[in-house]
Image 1: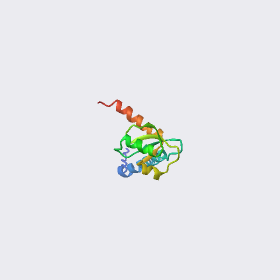
Image 2: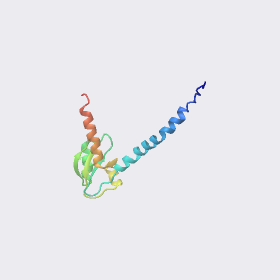
Image 3: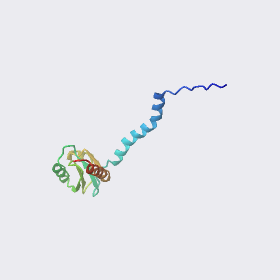
Image 4: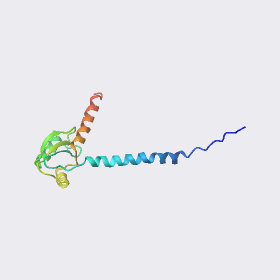
Amino acid sequence: MRVPVRQQAPDAAAGGLRALLPALVLLLVSLLVMPALAVRLPSAGQEVALVFPPGTSSDAAIGAVASADGLLVRPGGFDNLMIARFPHALGWLALWRLGVVVALDPAVAGACAAFLQSSSKGAPS
């Protein structure tokens, strides 16, 4: 008669962490790399999404765009988000002086605004 031999269970904590490591690395890389790909400086004649600090009014953001000879293409989903076009290239220092926190590809900012608007339509009032 054969007696079944019971195998010891592997250490769940060590094996679990080792198994999650590739997923955690991928998550970290995507959180750092993807936003970096969306950040860009405004080129002459091209649209750019400008993010101003939270609490910035739309009038203040429009005034900042106008002070740099920019043309407001459309407002964003929030008062502090503007899509603009400039006749000349702007550097980070010029944007910082305008009060811009970050400049993004407008497709990324538009996708975020569209997502927020569609999710708020289903929310109860």
